[in-house]
Image (cartoon, rainbow, N blue to C red; front, side, top):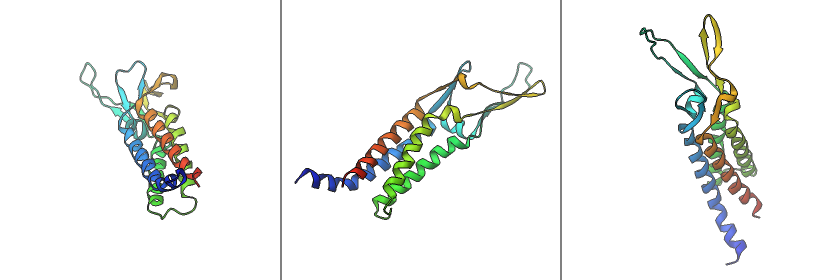
Length: 170
């Protein structure tokens, strides 16, 4: 069997491999995404996306609320586009994707890879009331990107490369 015939028969597996990588990237939102300098602990991607607050007690026993993150639509959009890419890849694998399904999946995966590495700029600082005025919990330079978004970006790049290879094989 020639190399060209082998590649043609392997094309059906490219969508499956890309979809599995993209599906694995979706679950990276549950891994640590950022840490804040001066604050002990890390925050998961789900905290950065939907917001996160704690209600600790002070020395007198009073309960107060500390908002670390607010809702971030752009970080949510990263995972929405990733889910859309998986859907397009699965439809394409089933033969119902259409002519431009590979290009759409490729574009979605590239955008997801870029957005994953932009988790920190897309994060929304939680607002806390201090002495009657609202102050942000952190500054952009205090955040450090951790494993979750990095692995999401790498998996999206790998899925895009696999999908791009399928496009290039004629």
